[in-house]
Image 1 (tube, rainbow, N blue to C red):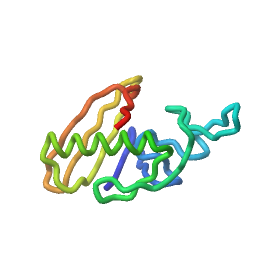
Image 2 (cartoon, rainbow, N blue to C red):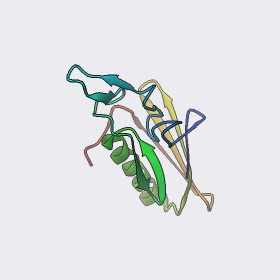
Image 3 (tube, helix red, strand yellow):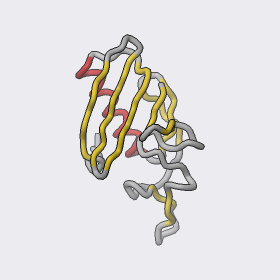
Image 4 (cartoon, rainbow, N blue to C red):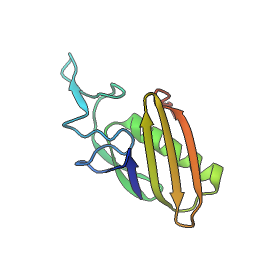
Length: 120
């Protein structure tokens, strides 16, 4: 599975988190309690690989993994998506446009606020 955010490939520890695109150097801050945290959501930085729809991808924190997994599961359910080929994420202001394509040419587009992280 390829993941692109605003045209830049992401999904490993060098290119960045599969949901926000930040890596350890560009996407963290040190909180007052000494914890390294994600600049996007403020959760503690874990920087781990997780499996989503058969692909191992890099995520900065558990919330971004859960949110990405939720979006992929939603696309699979809505569009009868098979094996995911490409995820194109376009971020513009506070909105996120996600286009999920499978190997059979099926496409699902999801538009949502980037400030709508779920607890699923």
